[in-house]
Length: 455
Image (cartoon, rainbow, N blue to C red; front, side, top):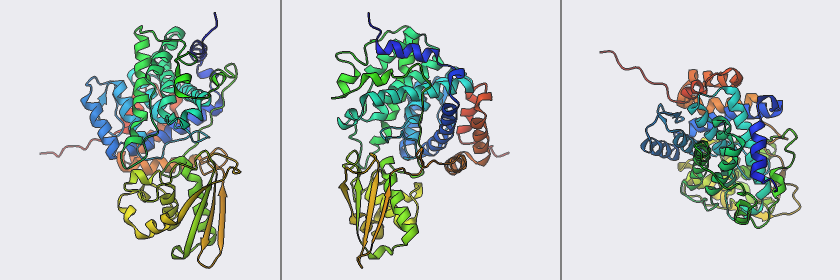
């Protein structure tokens, strides 16, 4: 009898331990842990983050895991749900190299909740994070681009499997129970690309994936069995979510160290827009064009992303963060595309509205990468300024340094938790291998309690 894909993966991840963790992967997940915490702390204070925290508190009272940005502890699955939404609420979370999904909202949210629930150590957390990220990417490689093109959102649909593996490592599931957990994860896989617009819909998607990963691992822990044919079965994940898939990607190179490539965001918007922003910033720096003399902006994009992010008139900052024309306009005007560039108030700026309207997106299949952008700015006097960006800032080929990531973390975390807590948190992440209980780290993600006034 042939061994199923879920069984092979369960055996692989069960054996995966700290000694097998490549130095490069260890460094990548540590860098991402700091980035995730900063993004989630800031995101917890947004409308969507606040709503998720309130829901988590109302849905259970058992104090197991910390709500980031709060002082409250809730059941682990609830914490994973809310923290995943917080970490996806400001469009500054990490990205894979193809810009199809975000590792940390489902995987890190599930892992941290389960780690705190089980009083896990920093080394155990690192193993869970690396394993979860590897699993998530394996599923995406097997299913995409077909999955995305069928309108399924990769972050939650593939992320639930990564979240499950991460939680399973911390639950210390046997191979048989992890196999069942895969089946239970597949039963809960969901997430649609119908998420662009003025609502908070996009922020919601990783929440169920993180929660469902903890649930799948927990149910399997208590003996609930799941289908071991969840991936390749006649009615399994690949058949249901794709028109074309490559199941071999799920198990390719299981006997070899896995290369985990994680990219980071310097701009507060959808990753495929970052190339366009870099084009705008390059032209701004080199040519300093007068904004009122711009006649037209042509943005050529690869067919993979050309039909996305085209909205020229976003009505809310949520829409602005997935609008290429607005992002180009604000980068040209302000020389930045950070959180403060994406506000409802700025959407009424007549200069930004005019420049946004000048941006037209075209399709260019000759561009080398799915996220590549080529910008041609035409001025009233006929001059043209050209910039092409294939590897945006934060990519593997154009990486953010440790110092830049620390600056990003401080900028996001300090206004919420204070300078002292932010510094302590960053120090703990840097020495995460020596942390004996992840609860110590999580307690620093909340606002410091104010001392009461003496009577």
